[in-house]
Amino acid sequence: MIAGRSPEPELEPDEATVNAVGKLSEALESIERARGHLYSWHQLTGKADFELGDAAALLAKAGHRELADELSRELVGRNVLPDRWSFQAIEEYEDTYYEPLRRYEARVRESLTAGRRHLYEAQLKEERRTHGHPDHTSGPGDA
Image 1: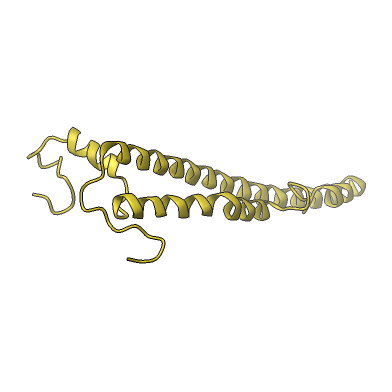
Image 2 (image 1 turned 90 degrees about the horizontal axis):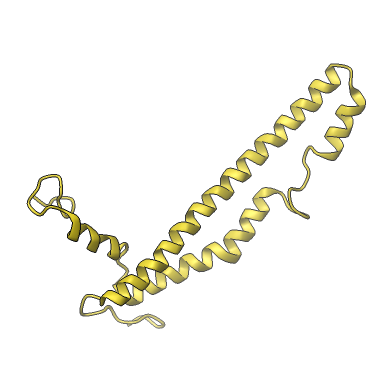
């Protein structure tokens, strides 16, 4: 046995365990989606910063130097949070919240389900599929 790791379960986990691990995995899936939204925010913010630079250049070209200089000075390259650009906020989120949750979820799965993922969904599939139907196979290679 590897230190800090429970032996693989000999029997299938009970329903309460499958439900608990499934809920933990569901939380991780929500966090994965939130992380994706953070990356969208990061990319859109970066795009907007370049657009602000373009707007400043166009204002200057149109003869509005004072406004162009103010836009460049006050907004182009500005921190989106105190002392941070968007990439720094994402890095802090990942280090502080995302990675610890991801590691914990994997540790719980290793301990309680031999590392198997989506056990709850696999059980649902078995319950809901039409056994013997060619479009309702249990998995790849099942005839």
